[in-house]
Length: 184
Image 1: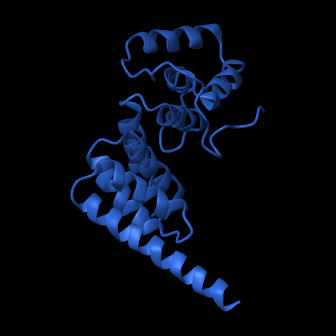
Image 2: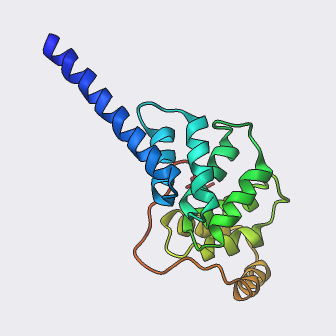
């Protein structure tokens, strides 16, 4: 038992030391390290949403789209800060404008549900389509399209043609938990 406790303590100290090293690299300007620290504090064993926000903000300021999307999620969910749909929308838009498919999908969800914006199925369809091969966006668009008229879909296609923010083509991307909605 003594050895198990000793091993656990040394593992915690090693992780703590590596977090300190990562924080030093991040403070020297490494955007990727800032983003990684944000994810670690948001989802890791020593979960701390305020620290996650701190590191996501630093990475987002350096235009890391994943960090911008993560800030949007945190503000939308009230994690580490008060729930704020306006700030969430702002950060999702910044990520979406860099062709980050999860942010584009989330904008679709926001417009479809009317979360902090007027409900707009045409705008939702546009953002789901812009997300490209994101599997959640494909499913969300399919469900939404069943409730739309042909005229609404044509309007969404017109808006799409005028929008430069299209996700990069490639393999199907994963979905974020809670963003794929069940069919109604």
